[in-house]
Length: 144
Image: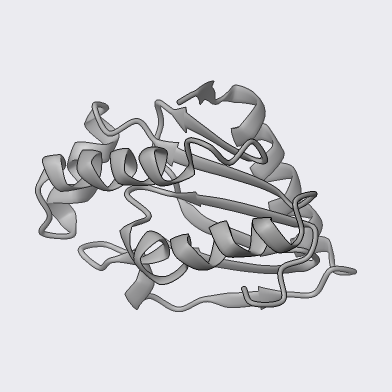
């Protein structure tokens, strides 16, 4: 994340761990390189999908909503950060930093930060599939 230079794409439910780890760094990085584009897709915290995932991970649905609201507040003045939400479940976490992509499943009763994560090669077919998957999610999502 400290070498982020052009784009960041990420999907998640609450993205609390992401926020706690990187929110301040991202704001600072954007001051250094204002042309970075960041796209974040979350599951609508009011949806049954989000509430179900929160319960599976032993979290309160309100904590998911609070996490997303904190992110909205933190990034509200960052014009290159776009946040959207979907009204469906996620099967996989997608985290692309420039040309490096990490993906991992949303396992049963386990927070995504605690599950296995795969690093995908930019020239591989699986990278392209997840790139397309993110674009579909992004295009179907509503502004947050």
